[in-house]
Length: 411
Image (cartoon, rainbow, N blue to C red):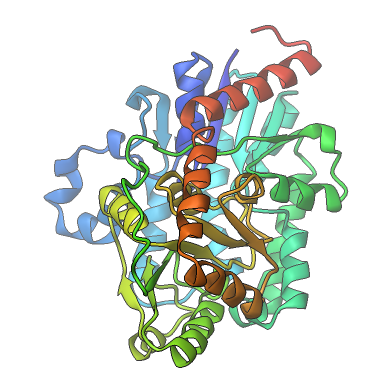
C-alpha cells in the first residue's frame, strides 16, 4: 500500500502524514516548505531567506523523515515576497500559487507508482487529474467546509460580504473548487458540521469520512482549582482576530457588558491580527490583546480564564475549543463550529451564529453563579480526553481500511 499526501500549506496535514508514516503506508509527502528538508543555518544565516520564510518554516516541523518529504519551496517563497511588499492578493490571485504548486506536483506524480492520492483543497486539481488517469483513488482532505456553504454565509451575513468584497474573485475560486471536487472519490473532513455541508451540496454521505483532530493532552491539562469567589468573569478568545471568527460581534458584546456591569467582565484576545480588523478597534476597547503565545503560555491562559468563547461564522473544527475544554475551562461556541461534536456532550454551550444576545445570556449565566464554572469545566475536561492523537490515528486508519476494502485493495 502506497499513499501520497499533498498540501501547499500546513493545516492539519502533518498529522495525517505522521499517522500514515507510523503505519508504514506513507510513500511521499508533498508540501511547499518543510523545515526538516532545509537545515536551520540555510535560512537563519541568510537574512533574505529568513525575512521571507523564516516565520513560515517555524511551523513546518513535520514528524516525518526528510527522505519522504518532497518540497516545492519557490511557490511559497514567491508568495511571501509579494505579501512582504505590501501587495494585497484577492482570493483568485492568491489561488495561483496553489495552482503553480499543484502543477509541479502533478508532473512528479507521472513518474510515481502509488495506490491512493490524498490532496488538500485548492491545490490538487491537476494532481487529482493525473491520479485518475493512472486509475488511482483520490481523497480530498478537507480542512474547511464545502464551498457552497461559504456562498450561503456570504448571502446571509454582512460580515462575510465585508471580507469577500471581490465577488468575481469569490465566484472564480468556487468554480475552481467545483472542478477539483469532480475528480474526488472520497472525502476526509473534520466534523459533523463539515460533513453536513458536503451532504447538503449533493455528495454521497457514504463517501465522506469524519476524522476529529486530537489535541496534546500533556500540554493542555486541567486547571488545579476554580476561583469561585472572584466577582470578575475572565473571558478568553483564541484564534485569528478576524471578522469571520466573530471578533466584531465579540467586541460589541464587550462594550455592552462593560457598560452594564462595569468592571465585572475581563476579556482577553490571543491571536494574529487579520487585515479585516483595524488594530484601533482593539486599542480603543478594554480588551487585553496578545498577538502570539506558545503552547505552554496558551495552556496557562486557558487555565487562568473562566470561560472560552468562539462565535465564528464558520469553522470546520476549532482546535482551540478542545484545548480550552482540556484545561477545564467551559466554552461557548457558535452552531457553525465543528467542535460542537464535543460541546453537545457537555462542558459548555452552542449558540446561534451572529447572536450577541445569546452570547451575553450565557456569559451572564456563568457570572451569576460561579459554581457553574466548575461543574461545566470538569465536564469539559472529561469529554476532551477522548479527543487525542491515538483516537485520531484510529479514525484515519479505519477510514483508509474501509476505502481499501471497497476497492479490493490489500494492505
